[in-house]
Every structure is written in structure tokens, then in C-alpha cells.
Length: 462
Image 1 (cartoon, rainbow, N blue to C red):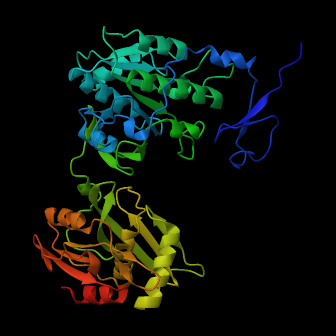
Image 2: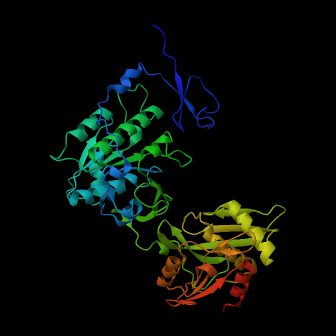
Image 3: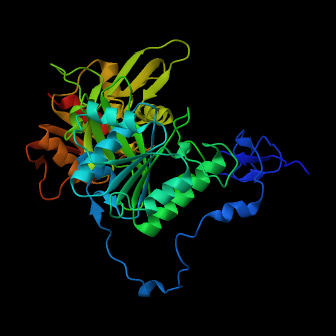
């Protein structure tokens, strides 16, 4: 009998190769091919029963389509990230570091859904039913009727979904986690590329065919990306990342992909003894409380999805050595080097012999260019050791020619700043409200067109 030859599977794209190569021939990623035992025969993969019949071809105009109905989870911040709640037949993939709070959040959401009349199921492959029950007691979830299944075999999980536990069809199912699920049709170990890909595909088809809203919990690699093949993120409808420092009590849930809502939307939670609680005013987390204005601090109004948030940008400029350092936390380092060059060329503020450190307070990551103006004002303030006025905010993109470009949804940013009591705003001229002039709900607006003009205005403020 001939010995089965091993195959090599790419951990990024799931592509196969008959021999090991340094670079995947399919996605061109380096050092991603992992040895995997070959399957005994190809027909064993077809042992799964078809979950949906053959669909007839229809013209697009003849297909009846209506707005998707959403079921609120009972957690307002999670609903915000999902776009309003769970969608029938939708599949959500949520990943995060170990111990960040994924299982806690989903158990709280399932309990709230069950109390609202939904038939829910929590499938755990990493804990026993007793461990899940003990965790629910610690969270203060008493008398919960959430159904728990401790199982990792795919065929048994699918049979349970079809058996309608609780006497009626399931509506929301959590699989914790997809890396622990395996199928008997494959000989590879649980967590391998083939197992994760095939199990996720069958669970996704089951959700689409039955209308069950399904949440898959995924592990992350040491680089912070979701473990498993990249195709896993393409299969699902929504991808959420659970972020946060384990030494801090605050957690962020960020939507990276959402077919039913806005991407880059975030939800903010605080970890308490009774589980995760939503933070209704996240701007308070990212703003430091200074008794008096300090040099090098500027408040920015940034957008996270559809939510405007106030974040403090801090800069420290100090005497550098032969090789001055440029370090940024929460902001792009290359963007910082670009802004320092514009500041020197078009505003006469030279930092070429200085160490420049920039930080976004609270651990938030800012990727939008609307932070440019606030970063440059914070750097200039630190260099001259002169603080910006109390109640001052700024936002706007700065181009290489020194021009200040408008930021999207400027009116919402200004209203958020006015609501939180800020009184002075430096904004791009294109973001100036046409009807309000230079006043907006107690907020004095200073429109600018160039970075040198912005610095001149700041110098003249009391």
C-alpha cells in the first residue's frame, strides 16, 4: 500500500502545495506553509448533507428584497458596533487577545437576548458547562436559561442546531471557539488551516440556511491578527476585534468588516466585577484632567465610525543627540515625520535637532489625517513651552504645501465639542458653518487655510 504523501497548506490563504516552499505560490506570503497529512480520499469531504437545495437563477429586479431586521443584544455599545443588533442568518467573527473579555461579553449578550424571548445556545469547546455556569454566577447572571453545549465535533453541533433544543428553532448561537471545532471528515488536527476553513464554511452555510444568527469566536496570533486562513474573514458578514490593555479596565470593540453596518465603528466597555459595562461618554476616557493648561497638549475631535470622540494629543519636544528620535504612539510614525517637515518648511518651526514624541492619550489608535492640525499645534506648543488656551480644540488635514484641508463631517465634530463644554475651535475654513458664522452653541470658531495662519492665530489667543 502506497504511503500517503503530506501536503503543505498556507496559513494565510489556505492554498495547497505538494512540497515546502519559502513563499506561498498563491498569495506570495513568506514562511506560511505548514505540513499537513493528506486526506485518505476526496470523497470523504462530501459526507456532509446539503443544507440548501439548488437555487433557481433569477433576474436581479425580480428578487424580493427588504431591509434586514435587527435584534438588539441588550448591550448598547455592542449594538452600535454591529449596526443596530444581530441580523437573522448573519455570521459574526470576533477575535481578541486571551483574557480580554470575549466570552464574558458574549455570555452577557446571550443572557440579555434570552430574557428578551430569544432561543439562544452557547457552544463551548474550551470550557466545561460547569465552568461556564461558574462564570455566569461571578457576573451576577442568576437564573439564566441560556442553553449550553460543551462539544467540539462539527457533526454533533450541526445535529444539535437541527434538533431545535428548547422546543423551538434557535435564533442566536455562539461558537467559542472556531479553532477548537473539528470534523471527522478531515484527518488534520483541530485548529489546523483545513479544519478551521471547513468547519467555518459548514457553520456559515447552516446559519444562512436556517436563519440563525451565529457568532464565531476566533483566536489571534502573536501579531494580533485573527488566526487561521485569511478566507475565514471573507466567509463571515462581520468581523470584530476586541482591543484593550489587560492592565486597563477599558475595552474597545472595533468593526473591521460589516456587511450590515458601518466599518471602523467602535464600542467602548469598562471591565467591572459584574462583567463589561458600556461607556456612554467615551470622550472622558481619552481626555486628561489638567488643573491648568500644559504645554504640548491639544484636544482633537476624531471620528470612529459614525461616532465623534474627543482625544487628547500630547507632544514632547526635547533636546536630541546626533540622531534625533521620532516616536509616535497611536499615530503613524511616517505621518509624524511628514508633518514635522511641513511645519519647518511652511511655518518656520524647526525640530530637526530635537527629539519629538507624540502620544494619543488612552491607548486609542488614530488613522485619519484630520489629526494633522492638532499634532502640529501640540508640537509647536511643546517646543515653545507655551500651553494652548483652556477649552481649545482643533482638527484638519494638512497638505505638503502647508494648506489646511477640510475634515469629513465637521459639523458633527463641532457639535460634540460644544456639548462637552469646549469654547475655542481652530478648524479648516471649508468646515466653517455657513449659517452660524463664527459662533456655534457657545463655541468660538477660528477658520484657517494654511498652517502658518493657524500658528499666528494661536499666538494671539489669550
